[in-house]
Length: 281
Image 1 (cartoon, rainbow, N blue to C red):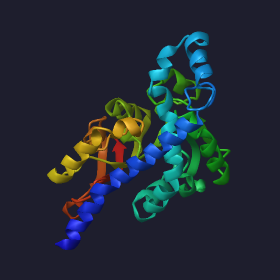
Image 2 (image 1 turned 180 degrees about the vertical axis):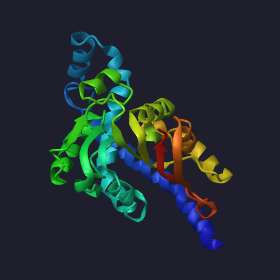
Image 3 (image 1 turned 90 degrees about the vertical axis):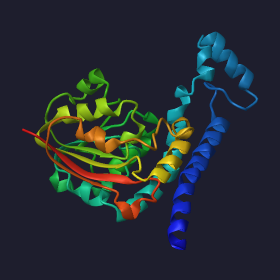
């Protein structure tokens, strides 16, 4: 009983630790803003003058969306190695290793999953990563993994039909769509899931590993409290999203093999859903 209570307490504190790291990334970002943005440096007055009178965009001074990607990238680059190690004991390595043919990776970030691909199974990978602040780290990871000849970085969101078409991502030709901890941050997850379903060829697989809303009422209450500030600090991330339902309703699936957290994991603040959905046809 004491161990159970301790596990719950640790789980409830974990998101707070992430928030602290994200806030540290925010403070580091503010201190390091360049002359094109608002800073705490002696050049602040000149910067404000530039934004208001030269660029004539005073709204940029109050636009969090202008900076959230940079703040999140700072958080992610600090935490990515930790997340990668924690995933070693999860289904993630085997899910990535099973990817084959032409693959669409949603939100590769800084390239955590690249070493886990089986190159002999891969024909082509398109990595959709709209956060350009992560591109240098992603391109370095692509080179390190020996995937430069098969990996294309697509610098737009999956909802950007025109942008995707420029890179040839507009047909039902994908064998696998891969989503590892990205649906939490999507502003319209239902539309993205449907877009992923459309891009899969018949018999293609949607492979996922996502943190989701808890089935435990107490944990769900904790998630709801964190949700008050969570999206603002972590680039729109939603800590209490029912992603499993979103995926199931994305389109017509021949097979749905999703594993969700069981009663033994009820205390987890970040319960996961993982597995694959196979498109009908």
